Image 1 (tube, rainbow, N blue to C red):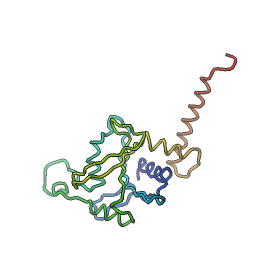
Image 2: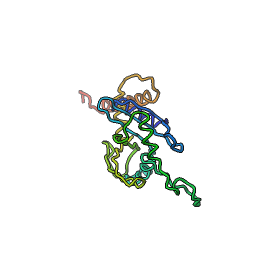
Image 3: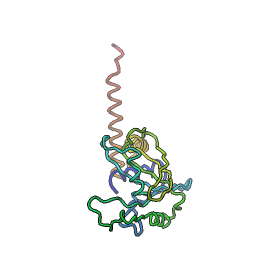
Image 4: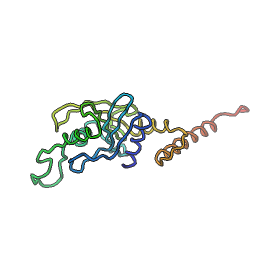
Length: 202
């Protein structure tokens, strides 16, 4: 689990009250793995979460850009490889791993028909990512439509998580670091506001 996935894992645990499972290999999935699965016991919701983050705004994707990534990560499509055609790649043979993905859901008690798919990225070009984006996406690999929730790490996940952390002293190093950064920002803003306030004698 990389740093971005660690943050998203904490967001689903602390902010959305889910139990989580990370880095689960897809059975017979040709080295595929889930970034994160999450389950909310209170309402029975299950989530398959994937994370693709670059913090440079000019490299951030549009919703259209994300569709091929959804097809690979959520729906089992084999990506096209660069170079000369050999006729032996999964893409050329139209290999698909959706059945293996659904079988792996079942192994951990998740009903494939009810799983909710979530993609987390830094920003989405042309969209307000301070709230979840809900899109219906057609999978070219399967010829079916699926709902996908898109979350912005910068404008939604990080602010929500930092607010939830508050001044609590977590042992988790990532949460502790986010807590320090939030308190540093809040205290500097409070100091600057006090410094700008005119005195009573002015």
